[in-house]
Length: 573
Image 1 (cartoon, rainbow, N blue to C red):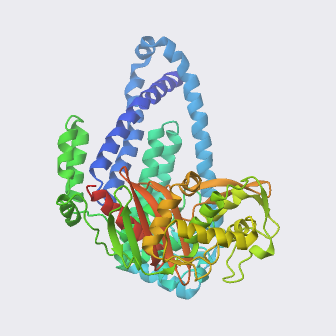
Image 2 (image 1 turned 120 degrees about the vertical axis):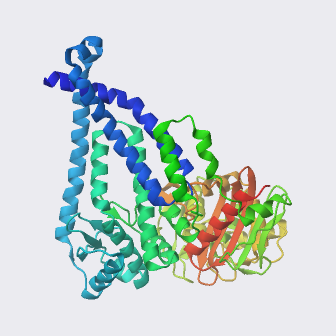
Image 3 (image 1 turned 60 degrees about the vertical axis):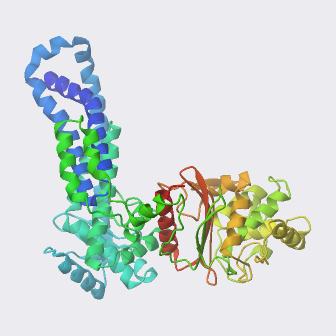
């Protein structure tokens, strides 16, 4: 077979794969939808099979077309003339993708060489976890300073790299949970699977279905490792807390693709799954018929969906009687209220009328007072020493002397909960801080709040108190301000500070997360207030206000919010 014939055959196989890949992607998407309640192991297997099929189809077609030789060329002469150019473009793209993979492997090699052995007691901890997982191969634990989190490297000589700073920044039990996750990757030979996956990405780089399948496969791989490590630890909550602590570390994950990092995948979804696992009773039973359906025909899709319906949960059964039932959930927050804003009905309440510190939830009131004054949003404000927190000595990204517009200060205060920006908004209010205090008290009276007391614009003072019920009224009032809704409902934005664009991220990690439609949001934390959250969400088309006060840690606050959202989704409003 001549080189020209081989090039034409391969080019035609690539052209055909454009539509074949779409069919494979649709089939896998259907199977994954059917297997929502199944174990992550089954979904990972389906993604791996789909990716293997994506590679196998063009290879098989190329081998099938090549023997046709001159007959094949004679059928499509115009297209045959274009094949050399098409294959050359494919070869160039593949070469670039393989070069990218080679750079990642080079980084892995350098990281291994630059790392140093971990202290003996930590190696002993890792060896103990490895024995419990049934690992026969030795797995050295090594330290490397410039890492975002633990990573597993190598196939035949695996090792786990750990950021040196992690040993002092996280408790021992949380570090062990992260190490267990990495050992789960080693036991499953995930490093080798990841390399093969990267090779398929390089060969079929032009097809979006391949990238979607590959990304989904990596996501499911992390969930499988989470399941294995949670089983080993006997405590999924410990791993969730470790992942949450890792997500809050101030570093960006720049780990190249050949490495397997604990920070991989959608951390928020993984934490939610560990804290509130979905029922998996029908998972393994569902996977086999679903695979059979895909292999035979897509005509029986409707039949394949029948076994997916899970048995009704107690919450769903309760929802069938009256239209709306009170939610009874094992939340961690000490003061909770959930209100259907359309009807005003209280869907859930827990000690909602006790006045407690509200921390930075105060900034919703601060923003409303500033917006009510209709001040020039473009007026330049300068951060001074008067804006520095001398009560809690909290950290700030805004230095004394920084200049920004009033609009920028408002966005920093609401999104990043920047205390100096909030203090500057009050200090530059007409009449100064005394004028701001007077306007704040007038706002509290206008909202009819009887048990709310505000003494400073930031929320740092424990004297800033309210109840969950009145905090819900404050959140509902804030939702009537289009500017507050716009600012607090985005995951991140850019704000001009000192003439430069600074990226600002929402302190509420639920904003922008899959399954969440958050219209107004504000988080808060002080030692006295605990972890607080006030937000308006859309459950279906109904606006619902959720207030959580004094939760024990961000992970518990996240779990509470997830439980409430899922329970609302089951309710028939």
